[in-house]
Amino acid sequence: MPKQKTLTLAQQLKSIGAVALMSFKIAPGAVIFKLLGSVINAVLPIVTTYFAARTTTALVSAYGGNQAAKSQVIILILLTAAFGLIMTIWSTLDNYVQIKMRYVVETRVSTRMFDHFLSLDFWRYDDKDTADLYDRAQKFSSFFAWIFDRIATIISQLISIIASIVALVAVSWAIALLVLVAVIPGIYVQFKLSRKQIKQWNKNVEVRRKLNLIEWDMLQPKLISELRLYGMVNYLLRLRTELRDKDEKHRIEIERETMPLILLSNVIEALAEIIALVYIGLKIVAQKQPIGQFVFVQQLVSRAISSSTSLVSTISSIDEDIANLIDYEQFMKLPAYNNGSKQLHEPPEEIIFKDVSFHYPGKKTPDVLRNITFSIKRNQNIAIVGENGAGKSTLIKLLTGLYHPTNGQILIDGAPLQDLDIKTWHQQLGVLQQEFITYGFATAKDNVRYGNVEKRYNEDQLMTALKDAEAMDFTAKLPKGLDNFVNNWMQDDEGNKGTGLSGGQWQRIALARNFYRNAPIIILDEPTSAIDALAEDRIFTRLFQNRKRTVITISHRLSTIKKADVIYVLKDGEITETGTHDELIRMKGYFYKMFKSQLR
Image 1: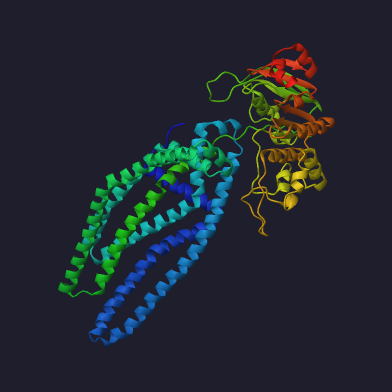
Image 2: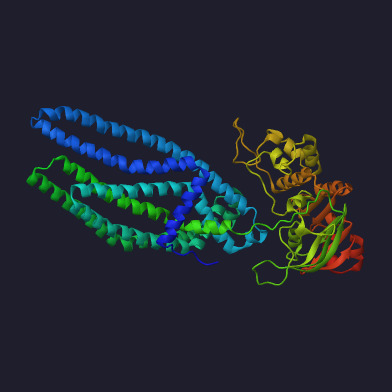
């Protein structure tokens, strides 16, 4: 995937237009209000300045004895105050609309992105290029509403600069030209600085990702014991500092290198303001012009310069985010999972792996699985065994449809798995993987109930699941029972703190969640590694007694797999032996060697 390129002005304008169009589609009323606000925020201060300048002239005239000017002063003061009040009211309304729009737009955009992220082909979650693209796109989606708000600010600042210059032309075209020329160096320098910063940011994406992972690990309570025991705390702190220095110091160096040019542009702007004020001051004295012109010019020059500085600063602050829009659009164009259309309304009678081979996309490695052929009958209990790296978990990923075979087919009652509506296939499955989810934000009951949120909650079914998973006793002893949070960091509305669970307890909760799903096909990948042998034996005895389920088990425990109807032995990605426990033991082959110590 190509590296992110610096955007041209045309690309920037196109991206800004895309953000505005996307925002308008989501919240048209709020966008119109915001754009109207940009014009008002730019013009209203200039109008207020105009009346303030006239008020100054009238005050001087009244002080000199002009009776007519006295009544004019009151009117002008009231007008100036009225415009100031309008600005205050508008600012309050604008703030409310901004908050609401940010909520609506950000929610819609981030939901759209999350939905697309979760619909991608599974291999992309292991793909580094996709991960890099997702990181940049996610950054854009997180700040989308903020970006549009900045765009509205840019529009307001542009109008403010143009209106200030036009108003200055009415007083003196020379001053207007002077101010216009003076702001150009500052704009150039700020753009040059922003380009260097973006280049540095893209260069250090890997550094920041590594830094974030280190900081995440250091703040995980469950990892603290190993970090301390292995003396990793100080080492990681030093590594964290090195990575921060590598990223931040370069950024500071860029600022230092650009500082002389920034100072020069600031001096040019200051000199322009001084020259403009001296010029208008001399003109007022020599030609007896209204004294309010001095205030008017001073405010307009100051506003034009400050608006140009703010304009560049705002553009610089969103320049990278605007560039990330291209990444966002590119990410949203990634093809979603190619889902089939064939519906599966009941459990299949037979699952067949037909000469299946597989290697992970984008990786120059040998096939993880080679020429796998076997079948699983309905309500059959099978076990898949093999050493680590033999391809067991990969085989499960293929069976669940997360990956597609490189060669061969997986047939569900004769239909290729790829032709099935994957949702209807997943409804037939209950899967407990080695790395299962622990819903730390939820109660013990919810952690089990989440096994099937598409169906109405069933209390009896949940209790049965807890019993079958040997989780009834310890959940009953929690301070609030099943309504207790199972995370030390959580607390309910009544002030009751959560209770942390051990690894074995979490594994039983995960088993109960799988059982609560009550799926006709259960897939267990090392499901009881943290559970004691006696509890495991009781769990699987109950599980295998229920002959109304198809059970597929991956395990290294002989006590678990010997209950299976058929055992498939994987070695280096191939099935080398097949049979019952007793048949494989009598063969004295690879299976026998693997479990020889457990047989004793």
